[in-house]
Amino acid sequence: MESIDVLVAGAGPTGLTMACELRRYGLKVRVVDPAPRTTEHSKALVVHARTREVFEAMGLRAAVEAEAQALMAVQLYFEKQLLGTLDVKRFGPDVPTPVFLDQSATERILAEHLGRLGGAVERGLRLLSFRDEGSQVVATIGGEDGRTETVTARWLVGCDGAHSVVRRGLSLPFEGSAYEDMFDQADLKIRWDRPPGVGYGFLRSAGLVVFAPLPRDRYRIIAMGGEGHAPEPTLEMFQKLADELVPGAVLHDPEWILRFRLHHRMVPRMAVGSVFLAGDAAHIHSPAGGQGMNTGIQDAFNLAWKLAMVARGAAKPELLATYDAERLPVAKQTLELTDRLFRGATSRRTMVLRKLIVGTVLRSRALQQRLVRRMSQTGVSYRRSTAVLDARRWPRPSPQAGERAPAATLSAGDTTISLHALVASEAKLTLLLMHGSSRSPALTSAGQELAERWGRSLVVRDLVLGTGDAETLGDRSGAVVRGWRVRAPELVLLRPDGHIAVRAPLARLEVLRAYAARWF
Ligand SMILES: Cc1cc2nc3c(=O)[nH]c(=O)nc-3n(C[C@H](O)[C@H](O)[C@H](O)COP(=O)(O)OP(=O)(O)OC[C@H]3O[C@@H](n4cnc5c(N)ncnc54)[C@H](O)[C@@H]3O)c2cc1C
Image (cartoon, rainbow, N blue to C red; front, side, top):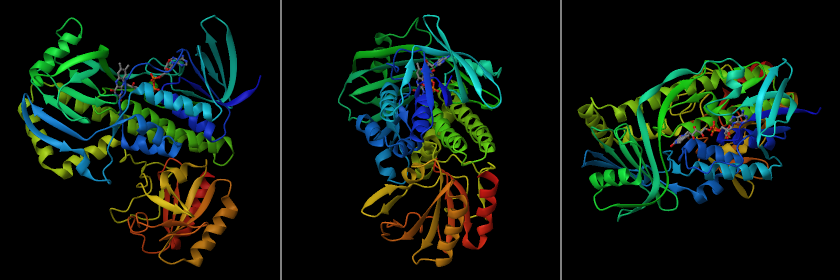
């Protein structure tokens, strides 16, 4: 029986991202999913800025954005009174904004990408059980016809959704509870004379109602909490809501109408031995803020490069323990954020307070930008992780080790490349030698020393302010050298997921040596 590197259970957005990344890094992967095809439903809509960046690193940004609907503005109402407009376009390029795309399209794009990488989802097959033997996992998979197969893999990743077999196999509790309120949702078209790309939020004593713009001239209407008294959601129920909130609008061509009860739950650990959990298998919460799919994709993006490096002997197996250490706190914060948003949206007791809060946010551009950043997941930091190391504290707004490197476009010979695509291109860390405006021979020789010793685990790239050349990356706009306040030659070690592993001035080269000795 041939042994593989990774068995991925589940091919939703999390499992597909995991499989794509592992294939891209050249690992032997199998992905099984009992579903006959990718989802037909729109489900998760919001592709947040950090996920857009991940898609860019995966080479998928253009494909996703060709089909997505950009968000132009959000109008907020208190009952029927317009409180104000959040003009997303006016935030400028530095503020990370989302786009909207049906989950069915996101999954299709990921599945096609997996095919181009030489992988495929084995459909009609589910994970039935598994046994972690320490150095390998022995799993049983099977189909509807009752036939089973034994698969031996070095690692098993459970991306098998809220009812995860992997989670149950690990005997991990799914701690949390269900919300009392129901959630009604409809994807449909609306005949009205409002501009495209604008979302609407109506704060009502009967609960929040949202109109979110979807691609192909559709809208999703979400009624949180208040409409649960109707026997089941229908087009007529949503039309009545529209008559009350946006008189004259005619709803038609409903694609999907449903009601569901929400839960907020998470596991106490996202890894046990050689088995990992990612996405909804590890955490579920309210869709308020559109965090669910995005968090699962980030889980996969955090774990894939670690598995690839360890599989190749380019990093010590201890690196894998940092997956749980880094992602569990993010899952916890996401549950807290979505819980606050959902309770704020559905509580019937705090209307005056909610009006006050919304009014304050609408008046403050700084608050709006903070909120957008928080939801975008670009502010996720692994600062407390053992897999990051800072030589010192850096003056703000300079990024610290553990934080995500701010987006930047670099020149490389005749072409340009995004910093995030550059660092994700190999299952190695990228050591940027930050020369500033003039080259530092001492920095070059420090880079050579590290490349000779640790070339299996890192690639060294010189970065200069200006245009660079075929060998040297150029920072024409100064987004990195000036943006990070680089005043003296510096070494920056970047992880394939775009987070800063180490940041040290040349004078503290020993910090890099210590990091490499610990992890490589
Ligand atoms: C009705 C609905 C509306 C939603 N709306 C939103 C929204 O607006 N915004 C948002 O952010 N999120 C939303 N979500 C949540 C979002 O869809 C999930 O967070 C996202 O799908 C999680 O992706 P995942 O890959 O982790 O899990 P899933 O998408 O659940 O994928 C899990 C996969 O595992 C497979 N599987 C199950 N058992 C096994 C097994 N034993 N072996 C192998 N494979 C198995 C399943 O067939 C499935 O394909 C919604 C979800 C639902 C159900």
